[in-house]
Length: 173
View 1 (cartoon, rainbow, N blue to C red):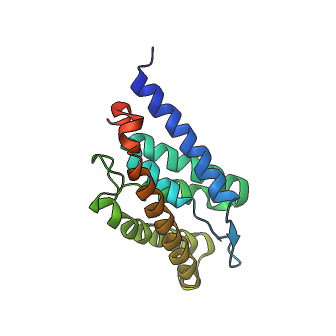
View 2: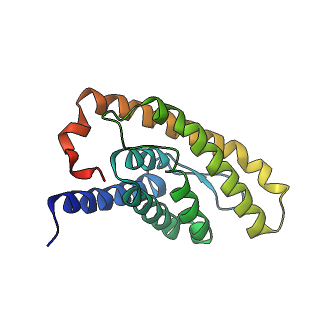
C-alpha cells in the first residue's frame, strides 16, 4: 500500500509531466530553423517540478513531459531531449521552504547553459556538423530566458500563497 507521501509524489509527477508536454508541444510552440527545433516555455514547468518535487520525481516529470512533447512534434529529438531535460533539473533544489530561494533564482542560468550545450551537441551529432548548430543558440537563449521569467513569476506567486506548506511535507524526500 502506498503511503500518502508516495501518492502525492506520484500524482504531482504525472501532473507535471502532462503540463510540461502540453506547454512544450502546443502552448507558445514556435518552430524555428530547418532542424525541427522550436521555442517553447515548457522548461518553466520543469524548473517548478525541480523545486516542488524530490529529485527522482522531478527527473521523471522532466523526462516524460519533454520526451512526450518531442514524440508528438519532433521525434528525432526525443532521445536527446529526455537526457537534457533531466539534466536541467539538477541546478535546482527542493529543500528550502520557499520556491524562490537564492539557489533557485540562479539555477535557470545553469539550466540554460546545460540546455544550450546539450542541444548544440545533439544537433551536431544528428546532422554531422558542429558549425550549423551555432545558429540555434539564439533560439535556445530566447527559450531559456522566457522560461526563467515565467518560472520566477510563478515562483513568486507560489511563495505568496505558501504553496510548499500547502502541499505539505509529503513531497519532500
